[in-house]
Length: 134
Image (tube, rainbow, N blue to C red; front, side, top):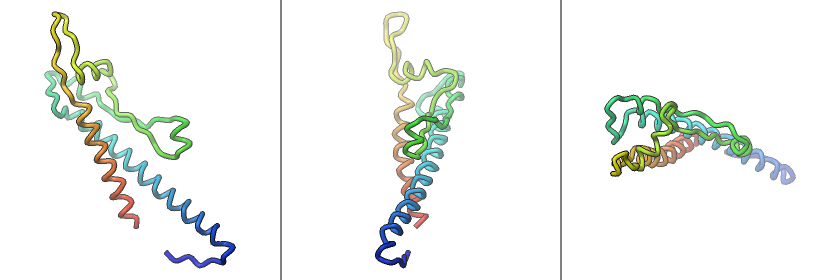
């Protein structure tokens, strides 16, 4: 991009370009975060390594956009991936727990692997979106 400006206008032109580029970056980041959150919820709905007998726990995974003062100040969106109905079970299944008979229930790590996949995916998506805009 070539910018023609007087010496006095140069700082204003640079500020404009940085502001416009910042908007494009924020849009790419927000879009990538939203897509990744939806994909993460879908991955948890599929069950991953956690094989469930009834399917009641896995079908209730969802993602939603959070509204907060931090997201308003930074301009980036924040999403939560959560289990709508069985939120009490997520920690117990992920980490295991004490059983009624005094033994331990085996942990089924299903959230942490999906979280790691989402971290990798969001970085790839942001990079891809920013490269396609160039």
